[in-house]
Length: 308
Image 1 (cartoon, one colour):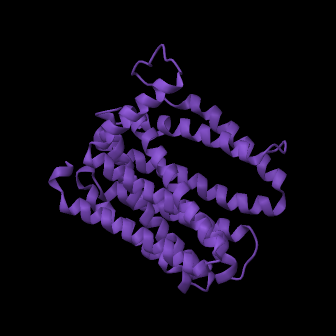
Image 2 (tube, rainbow, N blue to C red; image 1 turned 180 degrees about the vertical axis):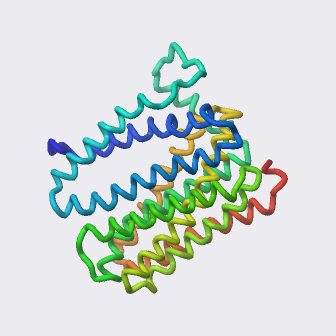
């Protein structure tokens, strides 16, 4: 992008890198910590990731108001620093897989078999569906905030949407810390009602007309998000570690999350195409989140014993 190449190609390359990095980043946690520490480890990883998003959202909004080229250069430097910091991660004691053959058809067949195997577990299905709904809604919400800010708050710069996204990120850090303190894997159902509250928070956006209230609502959405998603990530790692492997489980999760993001951003784009008001879209997105999370919660509560 710095060299003015096609941005679609650039984003595809970034996405491919993220898809390869995420299973390694989360999958290795199961090898570095004990099962009883998994929720706490995920909380720390999620909090540090979100703290970076918080800093990036704020800095990105300010940098793009100053210079697009400067923002892209800063992002490139951050990616370089990230790649260099990987040498600090402790080496895994588990032997690496050798003699891997990168043949497309066998890889797809193997991935399909692992997906079927993982989704036989009710716990794994809960984690995959829950996190997919969460990230799909989050992707739509990021676009929604950009359209909603000028309508509700009458501000047209790039910085404020970044600050509001940063407030969500800050709330996620708090929610992740609360999840580490109050939720254990055997009581993961405690986290599910927070998913419903995410939708309630988004539905409140049309009632917001002042900046302090906007920050408060975004912080609330973020706290509920962190409390909801961290235990589900830990649950998936435990289930995956006992079946297809934690790294493969995260890769499968990422596939469903990205499909969810494509679907919900597509729905948002369709609403924009038909010129739906930003406040109406906010109510629609919030209602979808609340209803889907409520269905997930009720299903879990209806079959509690079958999910262990």
